[in-house]
Image 1 (cartoon, rainbow, N blue to C red):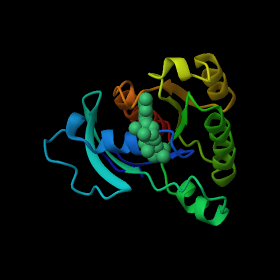
Image 2 (cartoon, rainbow, N blue to C red):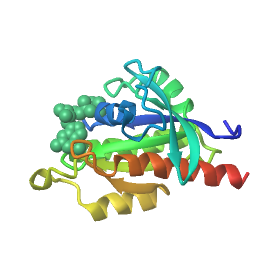
Image 3 (cartoon, rainbow, N blue to C red):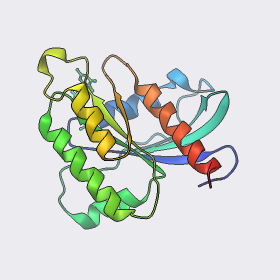
Image 4 (tube, helix red, strand yellow):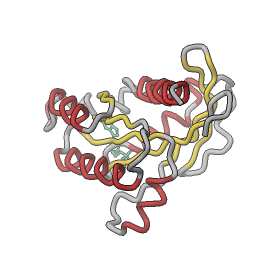
Length: 179
Ligand code: GDP
């Protein structure tokens, strides 16, 4: 969508247990909202909210509808096609989730081949220093290969989570301007 004011659908993807629900809960909380009302449209899986990024409002609809356990491509594809942008999460404490993120990145490219859809690779749980299985440089290298942005976050510490959402909006705006 490219209407003025910017309204975007952002989909959370990633293996089970990486922190998608934690991300959605932070987004749904009023912490960075322009008004103090709680997010009205918040069901379990979808939340729409206006946020301010670089002094301009943007409306984000966050979808946490990904069924991480299914291998059913028919169930996955609608989810993959519905977004204007994707947050591709893994846990830095779980190498399998990192590999899963790579697979999801490849699937995304298949489902949306011709489109330059903004994707941010998100290494969550960076607070769990002693349980880390995936290094920062591995995450960065993976993002470079997959031609997407990279950020490490801690939903538990509320570290860099809003930076990820704001980065998403900046990418979406750049894409809109270059059209
Ligand atoms: P989902 O399956 O991807 O939705 O993952 P959840 O959001 O349900 O998170 C799975 C578990 O990891 C929960 O117990 C969360 O409290 C925990 N968790 C999520 N993010 C973080 C984080 O950044 N740091 C730590 N230490 N725990 C986290």
